[in-house]
Image 1 (cartoon, rainbow, N blue to C red):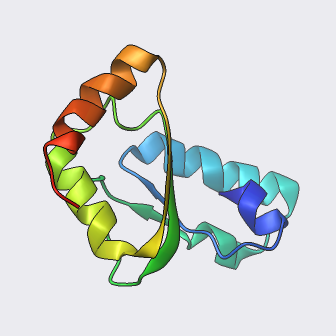
Image 2 (tube, helix red, strand yellow; image 1 turned 60 degrees about the vertical axis):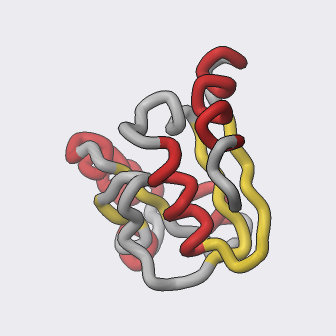
Length: 108
């Protein structure tokens, strides 16, 4: 998320783990990032995104192998995506295919 903000993108992040929020807060302070940037990082899970806003792109990195329901997750992606693009990354093709199998059964 910080990389996107540094490069001028309007970026928001979601993370369910408390320790990762603490880590990112320390990183932001150490690097001298504006305090407003840390407020763009929300608690949440893919199955229940904490946004009412619409986004042009959704990017996940090593997320789909951890969600409880791919169907709910992609439903949330569709809810907040404004006719834009998905960008997914998973540890292995097996992890990705495990998620995409349910996704293919879920009509967008």
